[in-house]
Image 1 (cartoon, helix red, strand yellow):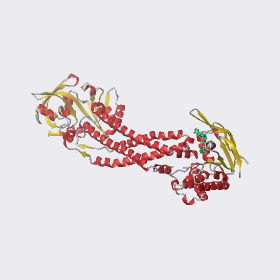
Image 2 (tube, each protein chain N blue to C red):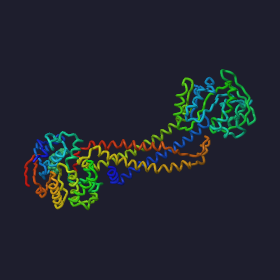
Image 3 (tube, each protein chain N blue to C red):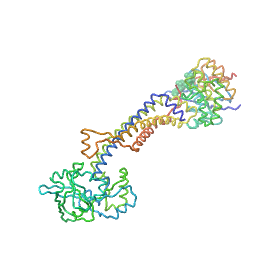
Image 4 (cartoon, protein in one colour):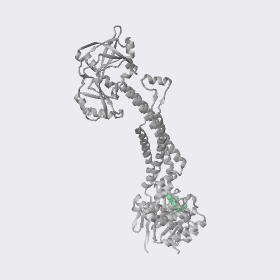
Length: 229
Length: 405
Ligand SMILES: Nc1ncnc2c1ncn2[C@@H]1O[C@H](COP(=O)(O)OP(=O)(O)OP(=O)(O)O)[C@@H](O)[C@H]1O
Ligand SMILES: [Mg+2]
């Protein structure tokens, strides 16, 4: 198997009024295509920072992030925007969706930015909304959807353009345990059906159990890396 | 993108409505203010200029400053006739012979302004014949004069009497003549009414021993708005070492300065108004950005370029401005149109004041597209300046900070 992401000596140091915080400390990690991996660890261990670096949202202090042979740490801001547009799907903790767009329009939004034809967007969004069980709600605005439904739509949006991988920072943090489990089931189903790599962070032990690989962070370094599935 | 922007501006209906309404009122107020101002001045200037000087005159170079007979130009001037073939926006050139004299009726003597006119041409321009309150209008070449009302009263003369005029003619020749008063004219401006004498051009030339010479050409414009253009064109076609082409701006300096300062006052008013509006739009832009920092962060994170995000915000602000603008124009134009065709009529003191200057006691309102367009331009300009802020903010946005909740 070929690795689609390779982190080499990745370090992120925050400097704030004289204090230095090493949020990510010399991390080396490889992610293979099709993985369903959880990043876990206590609060402040560097999960968000690591995912932001992986997604090109933040720049590392040192080290390399190689995605499919490209070192994305060398890209400019706008090159990174385009890189994310064509390669990465994002699911954030909450309020992922554009409030004035319907569920369907939200799912199509990234494809719209990619200038994909209307017919393709239509087909793909319907297919995904059906897969996540929200076909009936596709013309609802986010405010009319529950938190769990909103997160499912966010997952559909992230997957819609078939990115190389999906990053999700605590996607279940604001959900009750049933919705959380449901979201994870949907994520796993889509991961298997579409063979799209998922990397997500979580606190929740029940969510962790669904992962096939668990990377544990502690004070910014990898404390444990276990393949379970 | 349009639909996204359109939906976004209705997220906060009240704010959008308030911002658009402030633009609407500014546009509305400015258009009406300008309409009344331009309308009133237009009337005032037109009546003053039409009563005597006209918008543009041509003289021998130096005449206006010296007003002596050392500065005369030929009445049959090939240079002036050549202008006719240029298709300038000019109705006609009206010749005048203007100088001073002493008028006397054996008891009293007074310095007067003598104007030699072409009775037929002047009929279509100053319409002096309509101002005759006693006696009759002049014929070409006749040895008779029209005397202004107050002057006639001062000299105690009436139609049919004769008046002695004395002056110095061209190149020092002495000029004296006994002329019959054919009519009395009432001139609107008291200043003119005190000292004007009109006579046929040929009579004036004869009196001043200046056959075939005149002092001025009044340029009768087709459209006063084209005055500057005409002055430029005339100056370009006449040798500047011998002729001066003057607009009323140079001839009636005081009136022009009043006009300019009144204009300046309203411009300052407009600037203040639009500054307030500008800050209003700015405030809206700022709130919009603060509320949506996270949302904009998400958009950039999932792959929307910053220029696209700022275009979206700009489009939203622009739509608000356009709505306000259209509402302001839509509100003011009917009012403008109404008062344009139904001018406000004054009564009482104000009316008397107007009449004293020979004007109709009405306040008219100009209906010209240019200053309406001007307001649109102002709003567009403000919008563009204010838009710099969201664009700047989007480009300065720190993505990982924006995404932190
Ligand atoms: N912008 C920043 N400036 C300074 N320090 C920061 C910044 N962002 C994160 N940190 C610090 O870096 C460390 C790692 O933070 P991070 O948010 O990555 O942890 P986390 O594992 O996501 O925590 P949580 O589970 O609470 O979300 C923390 O000590 C945090 O205080
Ligand atoms: Mg975190």
